[in-house]
Length: 230
Length: 270
Image 1 (cartoon, rainbow over the protein chains, first blue to last red):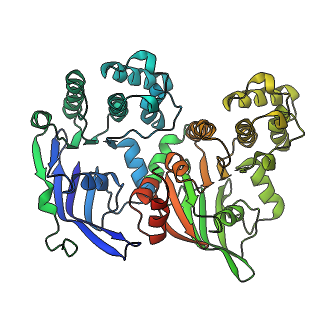
Image 2 (image 1 turned 135 degrees about the horizontal axis):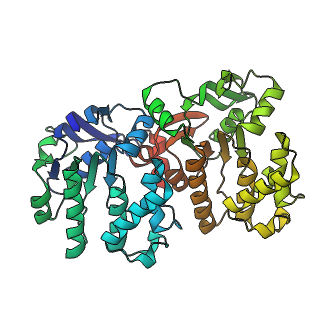
């Protein structure tokens, strides 16, 4: 479901003398249906950059990123919008929502956008929030006022509301207590069993052991002759 | 909208479904460029943000698109019952009819888009009457329904907008614009000049309406936080020209043009 080949990326800083910073070359990996692949490599090695490129958040300079048959590296914005709506989910570490929108709506929104009936979408959202131990009295409130851990769980509920065939997970178990960590790992295992292709970053080694079928070390994609490193 | 499924597929496939196709649009003020060489397609249900500092040409562009200003160059093709029509070349009465039916324009200052001496209900009903509605009960019923949709209490229906807060006036302007079920909405800084908490409420309301009505929106703003939450796609303008366009979060998080990099790095974290 994810097929990446010869991927490269450099940042050009136009307002800092036009410095060009190559961050990736020859990136390649694949994730099949029902498979979870973990990205490893020390901080700054390019794990998040790679994830963001797969999501279409960062532009690739070269190579291909096939997600469900669409080449994200070349696709028009509207193709990526459709892909994100139906196929490609992303649980980032940060919750970004319109203030004031109730938590239940925040979680149900990916389903509403797909045209799922409101009561059905809200029922699915409620089930996920309950499972992730967000107290029901908070569902009518905006998550912007919640604690970090609560916001993360709302973010996870939102990411799992629609059963995306391809899912990107950035540290989904960070800052969760043991019980909630267990819930999240269960959600990941269920998504895999349902055929989802998952690409993730897990600093939690035990979690990584449990859900990942393979690991890919992104240091293999570090550009070789790095003119800026000096 | 039952056509939602179809439009999603059409959107991915090819060109047949664009609602608006802008080609080589330009406007000069004497020797000075208002905007130049602007081309883009807008599809049903898409929200396009246009950002840039004051004087960048974004308001000129919006005025040309909405038929308020006559461009000197280019075409603005809009999908009508009779296929794609160039709204620049179209006769004035026909363009005015589009402006009353298929288009809506939300001004930054609600007073520019409302009739301040007419009641809230009258402001909404008036637009319906402009497209031929005559039954008083039905008009008042529609006005009441729309006031509720924009979260204005029913008992304010006979009050004049001058008695409303800024946020309420803006919501009333939106109700007046959307009551006729337009397909394309132009917005000029719709959250400008409102308190932050009022802005959030308006953004939430707009997002819901865009989704429920399948609206296509072109929104001009200088507020990057607003476009991040509202726009699917983003165009960045400088000195009358589009310097960069793409997926909103991609343009904001991985800007390619020097000007966009400056714009993004100049604001507090959005």
